[in-house]
Length: 525
Image (cartoon, rainbow, N blue to C red; front, top):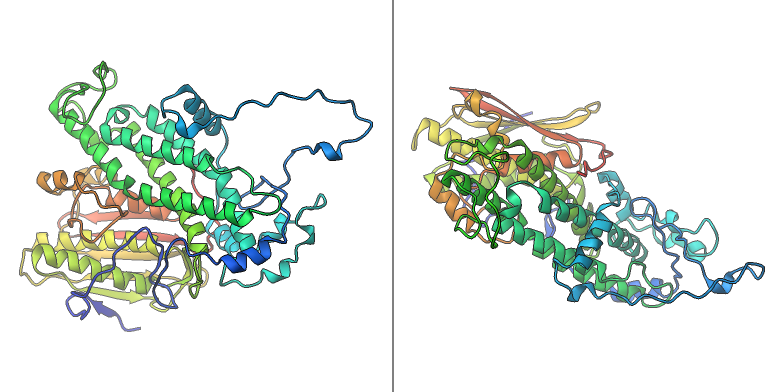
């Protein structure tokens, strides 16, 4: 198969680049690109089916609804002993309480004690297609038994019953995941006192309370459509609100690094901390002084950031999948998942975007050659793969230009797409001759704040308020979280990202993506 040459010869290099947004988009998937708007309501089609459904709330496995233990007094046995009536406790309006109130903290603690429920790529696809709707039938009698599920056979569009099933799962699952992260944000050493991290905690708490403001179970007769629409609107707000968290957390880490380099972590200073009367971090936690702490190697901080970001990916996948299922169908898509994701198409798009960024910075960009299985497709989330490939390609382009010098005859970057019928993974390799990485820096490349960017660029990036997960408008090298976040995206569905480097020559990056999609989310505790 002839290799495809991309880069300098691309005619689309200076066309309008792809911009990611909070709207799930179809890129690199057979069937073309499409953008969808988040709250398109097929009201008439939902109303017709929902009006005939009597819901028995379930709480079992992912996207299943199982019978609850609620007892109906009208069906109680006449032989049972009478139960004294209980005095109903006054409902607490959590939305009116301060986030630091004991009631809110107790609510968070209660949900954080509950286990999270993992989902796999395959589960998300099957649920969106309605393949688990039989789980909603009440095998214990009543409920959905009278609903004709044979009408739910259109794989291209999520029906009202599918949306109700997914929404019911999210209403139970999201408060648990948010509560786990709120507690983690409250306990992480050092970072918990940074202003930006405290803002993220407030944001998570706000979303936690908003999700809980919707009744846990949809109505048993009428009002199901209104319940689902209200819940979707809240999740749309949550999805949009959390779009800037990536940059906010990176800003918090930058504030911590600045405080460490200044030699003190005192409250009230301009070092990113806030509040009065807070104590200086003890000597047991950190040795005060410029050279006392190697921030990039602070294991507890990086372990926390790993947990936080992998959890954030999971929350955004679940919400994004649900909101996308509410849209008009897109060919080969089930929500945000493309059943025929083309690595070749995604790599081409990432080359365009990376070349745009490199040319803007240096005036030119190296050529990229793509070889291997250019016709292969598999189920995946295209936006995740685009993020990974853009990060690797822009790093390779920058290293190549800076190592060989501007206006030099750059050696091409090579992308190999490997796949076979018996392969466990789809593997993509990016190889460059950009001088490589010193062995002493290999551990640091996975740090969330290791970057070779100029300090002025970093200072500009922490003030960057772009409400997207990633953007081609950002500098070619910025906050330094690109590689560890890319690895988190790869690992989320059971893959991985590894890097091998030869100092003085170049670097090889390997992206592993599971073919079957059966690996469950690696949810942190």
